[in-house]
Amino acid sequence: MKPKYEEIADTLRERIKNNVYKTDTLIPNQTDLVKEFDVSRMTVKKAIGILVMEGLLYSQRGSGTKVLNRSFWDKDTSPANEYDGLSKQMHDRHKKLKSQVILFEVEFPSKEVQERLAISEEQPVYKIIRLRILEDEPFILEHTYMPCDLVPGLTTDILKDSIYTYIKEQLSLDFAGAYRNIQADKSDEYDQHYLNCKKDDPVLEVQQVVYSKNGRPIEFSCSRNRYDQRSYSILNVDYA
Amino acid sequence: MKPKYEEIADTLRERIKNNVYKTDTLIPNQTDLVKEFDVSRMTVKKAIGILVMEGLLYSQRGSGTKVLNRSFWDKDTSPANEYDGLSKQMHDRHKKLKSQVILFEVEFPSKEVQERLAISEEQPVYKIIRLRILEDEPFILEHTYMPCDLVPGLTTDILKDSIYTYIKEQLSLDFAGAYRNIQADKSDEYDQHYLNCKKDDPVLEVQQVVYSKNGRPIEFSCSRNRYDQRSYSILNVDYA
DNA sequence: CAGTGGTCTAGACCACCAG
DNA sequence: TGGTGGTCTAGACCACTGG
Image 1 (cartoon, rainbow over the protein chains, first blue to last red):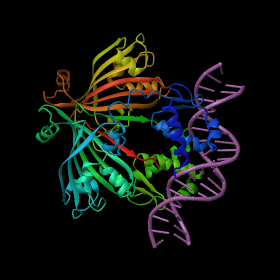
Image 2 (image 1 turned 45 degrees about the vertical axis):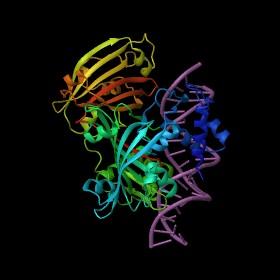
Image 3 (image 1 turned 90 degrees about the vertical axis):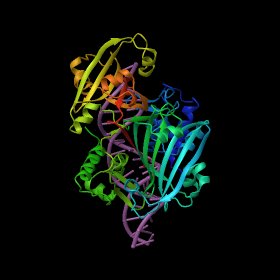
Image 4 (image 1 turned 180 degrees about the vertical axis):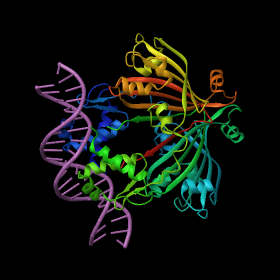
């Protein structure tokens, strides 16, 4: 059962997308929305707060809540605050994503992996290297580590499809959040070979640790992105 | 006057920093905090929500609210969701930052700048190029555009110091949020000259648009960062 | 000035996790 | 089963914006 404020947020989001609430106009005030949805004002406000965070609305005390023009971001960039997996992201954009499994094995974790996944050296981890191919062009070279006990039953078939879908739907594990670090780097021979890039092409490296809702890190990964194919975007709003 | 929930959030943050609430232990439950601060539970919850967003606390229904171990992020990375300006960020870390003004002029905006700053072609903008030097090493080459009418009275002296301090303290303008895009790029001759980097060194490029609280974009800038000196970090939490 | 959103209260019920 | 945090209400007062 979804909370009411999420339902309301979904409804409002839909209205913005369908131009029921037009860009640069004010949406109905909170008292009217209270009447329409028959909830208390705190609930309406919380729903609006979500859309403010998403950059769709902007509230100003004294004047009202305005629909923002979001058109010019949302291009080919990846929102750096989503971590639902590449498969879903590309599926939503109707892009064709394939994954080539380069390596899939089990090992004891190195010092760094132990730290990132907060596990001991005796807890085995999957080590996965995948090449993600977008519209038949090499795109991202992805090194992933996951604790075996948290993600049992992984197979090559799953890796070719979507790990995240498997985790969510088969294992019923939810994500609580993620920590990411983004930097530029020179490409090494490995990158050049798989990403099919030139010797002096840089790569965009994204390291991330994803946490599951029970508090344990579920994934540590390092993505080497073709510099000309991928960029990250971040929207930041001073919470209202 | 700060809202109560911010005051409480500050207090709790302080306690975490001072180890009054220790890592991996539970903080007092919300009913106890209600008694201590003599506020309603909604207010306590909102305060906790802020710290959850900051990655300091983790709440779980049924068990309590735990202090997280934040130690291993927060190194030399820059949080990608702060935009208080480099001067403040480095001052907070006790790093010595200097700025060399390479260009400071006024012009009519190009098509791209018009779009980003949401202004017409007749509204003049400042065009600023600064080299930011950290601990006597070139660090970032920064191209900035700002609408003249929003930021009147800019001088070279201000540019050498901190634009953001000037905007906040002298002009009393507050920021509402920012939008950023991060990507890797090859360095051009301009970068190589000023950042003192090699021909095959990549750069990390960050474009950003900062919005003021009245809703207007106040800055459009493009930072070219030395790839070996700077990375961005993002913490993402599914709002609780 | 009227109207807006921001904060806050004092309750209530519910979903979830532990022992 | 007892205790936790998550949601929600029906009010209230305040701060700010705009005419």
